[in-house]
Image (cartoon, rainbow, N blue to C red; front, side, top):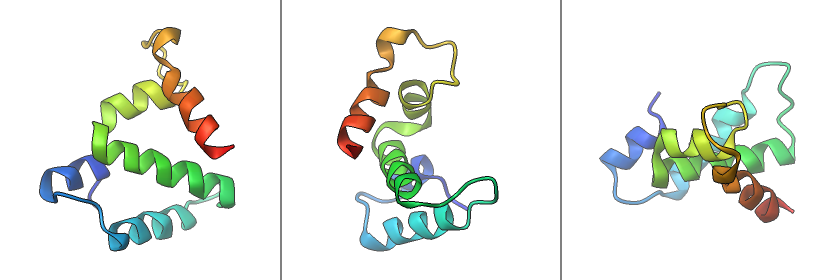
Length: 85
């Protein structure tokens, strides 16, 4: 499977078909993940960020598990939650 960061190197823009594949993949996430509306929304938004900004930026700014990033650079999490609310 091609990651969004890899896809960004191959195509100029995202299409509806690309986004459908992302959602279908998220729906098939194994337990304990519950693929509810919030999970799908956050997951799709995260993958779109990967397309435009790459894996490293997305991981460092969206996911708190990356401890080597200072709290000041975690505005991505705040922005994502503001978008989802």
